[in-house]
Length: 325
Image (cartoon, rainbow, N blue to C red; front, side):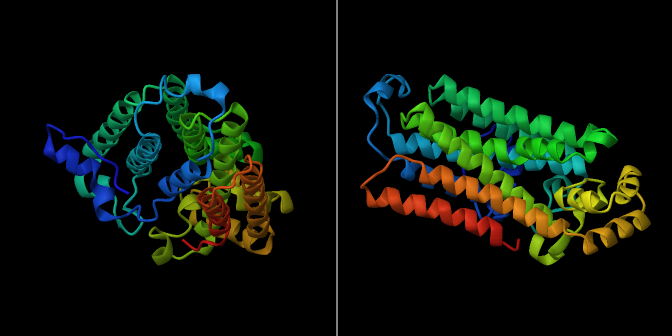
């Protein structure tokens, strides 16, 4: 799915904003797939008490509005990638040259800003203040998460609680709030909307935990980026945090900032003999299980299409755990 990006008076800026969509770098379209299945999974009779809050009136096609959330989510996600690549001075993104390398940092930042502005325009067209607030919160969380990663103290850097909070902000908040928006647009109750949120939250956390594993176990060709990318940038993720619990002496190496190749090699040696990778996978499985339980808690339905989408959402949690790239 390629979101509809409105015409821009500066063609080069529009071309930059559409770069990753045209190149197919986000070919998996993970978030839109989740959201469109979530829309179908919640295709149930609307409680009478909720109809008054259904975007003011029932005008407009519900499915179109929910699809717009998927498009907005993808625009926000890609905008964050463009900005992250500038901050990280990245060379590639999923196997192709990153936009900042192809067109320069300034245009890459402006392209991200352009996508965010178009996402805001699309959001306003939905006419639902709660949905606007939720998506704005997700954008705020993206910024907070990146700031937490850049400015963390040595103590917080080795805290699993801090890591999970940062991971929620950077990865899980966008999909969890988007899932909730889909439920709200469908006029579902606060309880059902929260279940949708919980699904997205736990799916997002599981996804990132497996991503952290793949940074150590994947290859450059499968990941589309240099393996060990995080640790080479001094970023401490779950596998290393679990290794520190097992080998406290590793903490001294991590506190030095992992700026020297020798320190990285030592850290990797500790990780290899630890249960860090195994425990990270186990934690991802716990979150995947929480996501499945959220789907199982949805109200019963006799609609076969609803059941198909719910099974697809459950299947996506398994795919997250078993993916290799």
